[in-house]
Length: 355
Image (cartoon, rainbow, N blue to C red; front, side, top):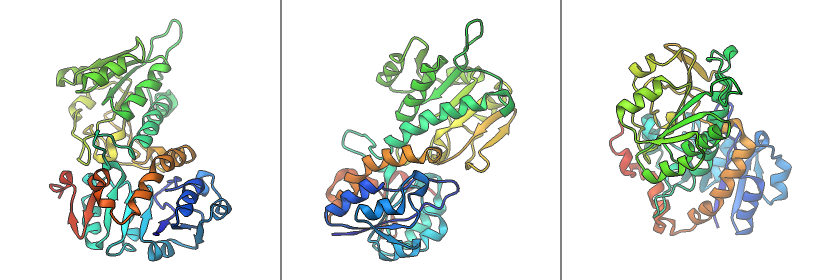
C-alpha cells in the first residue's frame, strides 16, 4: 500500500487534475490511500464530494499532500514553492520537460526526490503512452486556436482555413507527423485547408497523405521547409526528440520573410520550441508578434480544455501509477526510462548535457 497525493495545480490558468475521481477511486480499491487537495478537480468539473464518494481522503492544502504522500501525482512541472515541499526519497510523477528547464532540474536534484516524467516513460516499442493523450489534444487545439488567430480582428490575415466557393483555401504547414502533428493535420484537413506535413519518417508521411487529397507529406529538406513556411497562413511546430530540447527547424530569418498576419503555433515550446522566434507564454497573455507574424506560445495548451484533458490523461495514467506504487517498479523498462532525476543525480541520458 502506498500513500498517493494529488495536489491542486497552481500554474496560471491550469485547470487539469492528475487523476479524476474514478481513477483515484480505482487506486483506493487496490489498497492505496489517495489524498486529494481540496478544489483540485473543480476546474475539470469534479467536485470534492465526487472524490470523497470514491473513497479518497480530502486534505486542506498542498502542504498536507506533500507532507504525507509517498508519491505525488500532478500534471504540470512543480513550481518553486512546490519543489520546496518535496523531500528525499519521495516520488514525483508528472510532466517535467526538464530539457527546457535547467533550473528546475537542479532544484529537483537538491530535493532528493525521484522525479519520473510522463513524457519520457517509453515502451520497448518506442511509444510514449503518457505524452500521447495530451499530444492528441494539443494538435487539435493548435488548429482551433490558429483558426481564431487568423481572423483579422485578432491580427491575422483574415483567412478562413477551409475557404468557400470562389475563395482560396488557407495553407497550413506542420512540422512533425507524430501524435500532435498528426492530430493537427487531421483537423486542418477536415476543415478543408491545404496541408503540408514535414517528417523524416516515410511511413508517417504516408499516414498523413491518407487523410485526404489536400494533405501532402514531405521530407524536411531546409529549402523546402523555408519555402513552405514563407507561404504558410498557419505554421504549427510539433517536433519531438524524447527528453531533449527541440531543434530549431525554422530560423528567425525565415519568420521575418513570412506574410504579415500569418500565425505560428509551436506545440514544441515546452521543450524549447522548434521555431527560433518562439518563446513560452501562458493563457493570461498568450500571443506576441514578431516581424508582423502572430505567435502563440502557451506551454500548457491542453489546460484550456481541462475536462477533456483530465479524462484522457487519467485513463492513460492510472495503470502506470499502479505499477509505480509497487516496490519493484524500477524493473519496468518503460518506467525506468521515465526517471529524470534520482538521488540527486540526473539519470535520463538526454538531460545529462543540459546546463
